[in-house]
Length: 155
Image 1: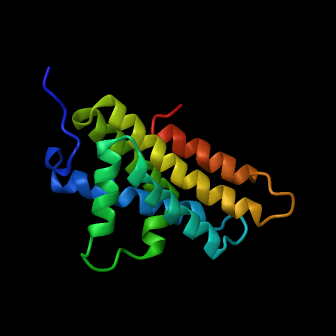
Image 2 (image 1 turned 90 degrees about the horizontal axis):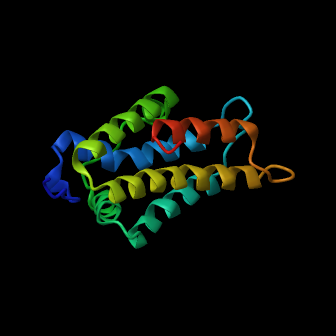
Image 3 (image 1 turned 60 degrees about the vertical axis):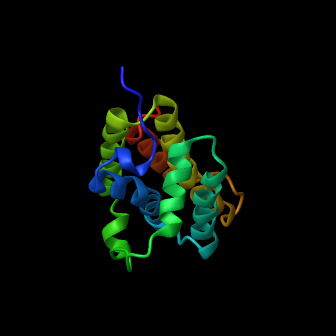
């Protein structure tokens, strides 16, 4: 059995781009208002960015390498938010990431990455729900997180 490598060198440029862009796409999708999900404030997006940054302290070489790559990226503006926020596209990207991780990542790093991405979305949704009276997680946010968790093979 070959040893799996957790740095960018183990992935094609396309795969690495998918891994490093997914957290931002998840933030946009989680922060996007919709049916049962009223306007999300700036605080929700900032919570997502904080959750990404928290990946620097993860006990996973892969998560730390992805966060470092996100912060080191200087390749110009990202695609328009509307393009990033399509939930179906984000879920498809999550499933693609799971396939990439299955091929290249150590199982512990794969699980850590997938849980980290889910935690980014959860923090955005929890922050947005706190702005609502009563503060429990909105049913639409629960459904979003459940669908995301399914696409990330966490359930």
